[in-house]
Length: 325
Image 1 (cartoon, one colour):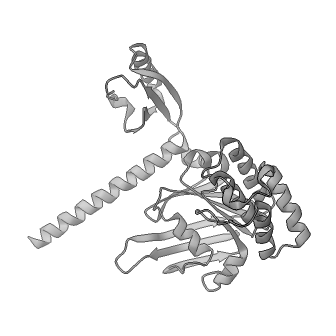
Image 2 (cartoon, helix red, strand yellow; image 1 turned 120 degrees about the horizontal axis):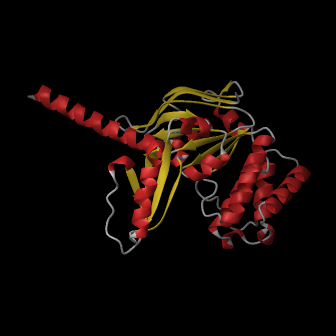
Image 3 (spheres, one colour; image 1 turned 180 degrees about the vertical axis):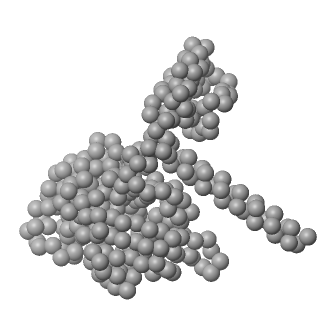
């Protein structure tokens, strides 16, 4: 494996909650590996330790067999990174910024020039190639930031929320370039909370919550645990009364005017009949019944973890109260 993370733990402050706790990961060359989790799950903290910007409290990190906790300088040479925040390129054109980063990372002048031009063309950035960086939109700046990480890629390319602000057309072009980086031999570590994009783009992934890895595997392996379940999605009529989901629908989430729930495949007919009745009476505009997705896995896992944490906190408080009594 190209990257091996074992038992990494990191805490900010003596009494702070762990930002990472017992994290184990292995990433191979040629692989796109996803780190999936909500804001505050510990993804960026883990990345900062991998690239040598933070020292872990415990555990080990090896890149190509080399201990990068002991040698953080090697980590920074071995990794190229697109940070979550926008890279400031005011006063530079995209072409200048991309080529400058490539040369700083040790690329030859002609090699970097050719590769920068290819990336600009592949991402359809030609009309902004020589524009002032201060005048670029957020999405274009994000794509330029990706090019700066990819023009002279390290053994590991780390992309932290690479598609933020990027339009749908260029987002597809970006994912093609991410795949190409892996196909050319890099290990790509993709940091995101966008479940839909992860499902389409990664070879393996880990789901993080409160600094811990809840599960790890391929998207297909993770979805196998809910293979007997279907995803029921309802689009509510804005004028309709609140809908009480039936018991067979189980836990559900509400996002705007949509309700999403999982249903046992055995009850697909009952669920479809119930949803058709709602549509016939005008309480919903449409519905769909489809195989469960990685998003359903994520919601189930993170929801279970949150419930467990709440239960543990309550139990701890009860024990403290008993001892006090």
